[in-house]
Image (cartoon, rainbow, N blue to C red; front, top):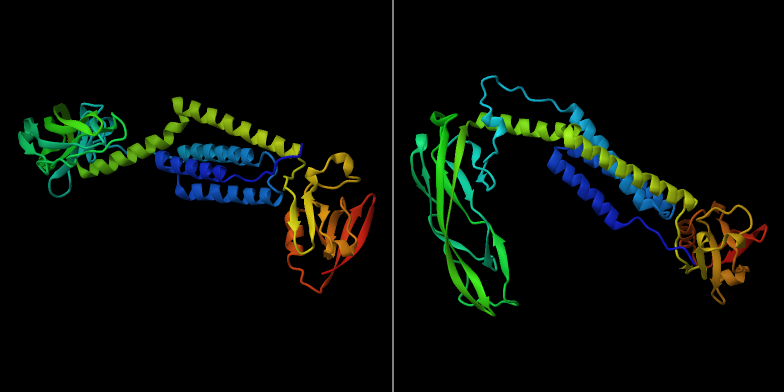
Length: 387
């Protein structure tokens, strides 16, 4: 069975780009490092392509990418410097979940940083609901605040008008989508509330269509509510918290579960790398290109990797081309080329790959004279070609 043609897969390149993007986004990995890793891998990919992308090329690139990313994460964690934390800073500023712009579900206590100027805008989320085609609205929404911020604060805007049509065409009976009801409120937080705790009770009346069957629905109403506490901090505290979180993300890969995960991924990268190297060595360092036409010469050539070893006499490296079918009355036939001739040189230039042969021959023009050196049996024969 003939070997399959191999190539550096576009999927491999996309996976590497995606992995680099993820570590930059999640672990504060320096973008310049990510670009550097990609450039080095691109150079290695080009070197493999020049050898017809031998089997194992994609595994090797993936393995090297994993190892490079792991090494980069480890170095980035080692170089991370913990920001200076003032002794009088309340622990809540660094330890509570943040509510920068949104108060998400999943916790009851948050740290919020008041705006340098004007009111602080927060989007308050509620438990998900399933609504027909994702349509929903609210008729009323407000927040009751206690302690230092005592008062009632309405949603802005106060209402979210229904956005579903009178008739909703559906392709099945339950085309529901999970949505997260939320509204935005402006709270007059300022410096006088610094390090205060404010308890809030948020409520909203949610309406949404629920499917009854083909193209039929009814409008449901749900009264959603939640209670949570905000610990108020300053804009300067926000900058410190962002620095602290960035340091935690970077340094966390070298401690506890982060270190275990890093070592596991490194082992996976080593496996892929060694697997790829083994496949490349087994293929003699070259890949396979399927037979194709050297049109101007009038001959079909194949990569020698497609030829049984016993049919090739002497030390012929994989990658050079062997003559297959010859077109009648072509320059190749007039020159006296024979099937199974192995092209070694063209116009004095070594032909060490299928691409090299094609690149040289494509430049030849009608009426020109050229020379080829071919291996025929155990002899090297010089052939004169008239185009």
